[in-house]
Image 1 (cartoon, rainbow, N blue to C red):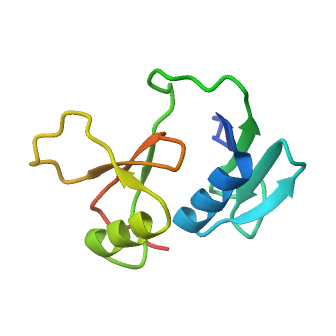
Image 2 (image 1 turned 90 degrees about the horizontal axis):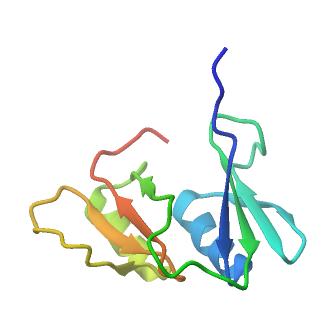
Length: 124
């Protein structure tokens, strides 16, 4: 039997702010919140097909590139509509040397963590 990714822990300055942002991006709900850590995931909770995300308060955020990078795909709209939605909830464009020919957008969450919005639509 193989292992399966069950959760991702992301160190951050403001766990609630990032949990709110990523809940909007992914359609997740808050599963646990102790003030210093906020866990979000699908309504079915921990242990399903999708991993949960835990935002853990850190007073020492890493200014260099993160070791983790999240890609998201639209599920119920096209890429351009999803881009507008993400920008509307606090994402911003990131310049990492793109040529303009890419089929994805590089964005940053409210704390500057880079992630990509891919073109391919996935089933909800």
